[in-house]
Each structure stands twice: as C-alpha cells, then as structure tokens.
Amino acid sequence: MKNVHNKIVTIFGAERSGIGAAKLLSHFGAKVLMSELDPFKFSEEKREIFKSINAEFEFGYHSPDVLKADFCVLSPGMPSNAPILDKMRAKNIPIYSELEVASWFFDAPVIAISGSNGKTTTVNLIHHVLTHLGFDSFLGGNVGTAISEIILDSLKISTPKKIFVVEVSSFQLDYVSSFKPDVATLLNFSPDHLDRYDSEESYYAAKLNLWKYLDNDSFAVINSDDDVLNHYSMPKQSKHLRFGKHKNRNDVFIQNNRMMAKIGDNAFEVLDLDRFTLPGEHNISNALAAVCSILPFSQDVMAMGTGLSTFSPIPHRVEYSGNIKGIKFYNDSKATNIASAKVAIQSFTNIWLILGGKDKGGDFAELISYLPKHVKQILLVGNAATTIATQIGDDFPLVMCETIDKAIDYALKNGVAGDTVLLSPACASFDQFSGYEARGDFFKNYVKEQFVRDV
Image (cartoon, rainbow, N blue to C red):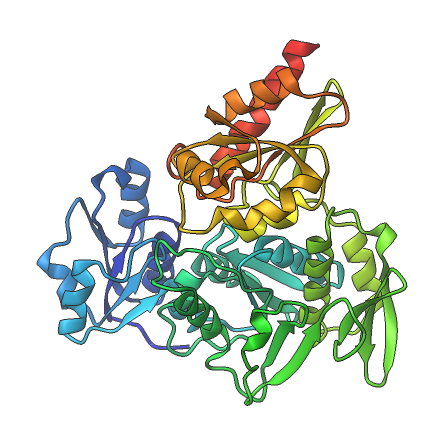
C-alpha cells in the first residue's frame, strides 16, 4: 500500500473510474482536484460527492492548478494525446490509470481478466463460482463498478477469503507501472479500438501490459486456441496455466463433451457441458478461462461445476429478450467490435442481424464468410451504416434502417416463425446512445412494447 497522505492529485475525467479514484485517494488522505473538460458532465449529485470527500472540482476547463499535482490519474475515456497531458509530461508529473492507483491498495489476491472479447462474461463466471466456493469475491473494473469502489467496499469486512476479480481494458492498462495481479488471464486477441490506437500491434501491446509486472508468485493464463494471442510469448518470470478445447498442453480442456481440469498428474471432470446453459462455443471458452483462473485458489472441481451450471446469463451478452410470433430476439449490445459479433452470429441461424453504431475502425468485410450460413439479411443502423455497406458491398443483402426500432419493425414485417433477430452491432453505441447498456435496454424495451401490442 502506497502512502498518498497529503499528496496532491489531479484526476482527469468525472465519470465512474475518476469518481472512484477520487473517493479512494481521499479516503487515504490525498488532496484531490477533479478536472473535467466537458461542462455537460457536471451534476448536483457529483457536486455533493466531491464536497463529501473534501475534493476540489472544476468542469468545462483545466485550470493551472492541475499542474501542481504530485501525480495525476487518467480516466480510460481520455485520449493519451490530450494537450493537457503533454503539459503534465513536460513537468515530469507521473500519469497513472485508475487501475494502477487502485492496485496500490489491494489487500487480498487479485484475478485480472483482459482480452478483446468475453471479458465481462468471464469475470462474472469467476465471481459467481468463487462465491459458490465460499470466497468473499469483489467484482469490478471495466465490468461496471470502478476498482477503487470495490476496494472501499472491501474495507468494510474482514475475512480470510477475500478476493478481487477485475475486468481490465486496454485503456486501463495503458498507464500501469506496477500492477501485478496474482492471476492474469488473456482470453483472446482481435482488432479493436483502432480509432484510438494507431495499429493492431499497439492495441495488443497495451493488453500485454497485464503480464508486464508478474513475478514467480503470479500465474499467467492464456487461451491456447487463440492463434493471434499465441504468437506472443508468455512471461518467463511467472507460472503458466493454459485453457483450450484439446487435452494436449492445456490445464483445463474439453473431453467427450465434459470440461476437465488437470490437478497434478490427473484430470478430473468439472462439468458435463449439457448442464451449461450459455449459448455458443465462445461461452464454453469463457467457462474454461474461468475455471483455469480459479485453480490457483481452489481445486474443488465438483463445486466449480455446480457454480457454472447455476450461472445466469449477463445482460447485453447474447441475452434472450423475447418471442413474437415465433421470432426470437437476442440482445448482444455488448458486441462493440467485429470479432464479438462473429461469435454471436455463429450461435444462430436465420438471423435478421442488426449492425451499426459508431465505427471503431474495423473491417466489416471480415463478416462476409460468416453470413450465408447464419444470416438472412443485415439491417444497418447508426453512423457506421454507410461504411458497413461499402465494405460488405454487394456480397450480401443489406437494408438501411437508421435506428434500432425501425430495424425491429422491418424484421417483424418480413420475418417468419423460426427466425432470430440479433442485435450484435460490432460498433460502439455513442452515436445514438450513452453506452451499450442504454442501447441494449432500448432494444429490449422496444421488443417488449411490440409483444404487448401484438397480444
């Protein structure tokens, strides 16, 4: 735990992670200035929060006071090339992510999960199984609750079975300088956030920071089925665990439709996959990752299997949302990149696929080979609609629908019983919504309204 008492700290970004960092640092005696460039992010609720922790705050500008800091904390949404950061660097003021700062105060083991896709489902699986095993699990990070917030929550209890489970994004890993989880799991690599990174390699390099500070007490966990990820070497200084479909080289694997885990020289059944309710091969991979990440803390594979079998689906991740006249609706709003949409598409047939939103710089032509077997028609929405149409071209039928409600109306008018309407946008949501959650909620609510109208 680092001593931050009386340190002057500037926090850039008054959203979830920035507010969490302000609370945590203030709790340990730091003098905090919250600086938010966007004036529209001010609210009376935030004013009360900052006043309650004796933090100063400013909205709509960065004052000269931000340069008086001993260090600054960068919210993940703030780009690295922001002019104010150049001024911080010129004064040699250290720049940290909220993840890095929060990690100074961990007082129990940490399981950290990153990768391009599947992070949220995997951390929720881990959290659920750990709770079933009797651990006091604290879940946070990119999944919804700031890491700083779960640390503050954890201070309220004293238990020998405390454990932290954190989902970490590439943005959070950009500014780490010592973050060393006990288990560091990489799920997969595929192009993403190319609107922020100048190349796939720089994006992957940010992800690999998860392994940068591991030591011989740490476990690096890798998906042996992911070809891109396996081009990179695992850290030599840590212990290694692997998961994948095949028995060879993997510590958790599939054999005869059963999930198996190696303990010593023997392999034990964790779960008959017929008892696992999440759809799609990608979710089986997520479950393998979850078990592999838990093995350093428990070898009760029977209890792990029970935990997996009782897990409920996560909202906005291929979430069943209703049935109207035999047409099923699934909300996969969390699919904000092309690779994530691919795995959702492969889970169904006869799909009316809703694509579009805010383009993140991917190549939508990568979807073409998946379309004929699974998709009836693509329904385009949002700012990226024209880009998607251009990249897919005449290889597949497309309809410009502009908005999600119009896409649903079109599918209901033209679909038949047995079809699936899948919102798996492969884009960010910020052109029309405040986040993927708001987009998914809109989809579900509109489906519900059509069901009531149909009845």
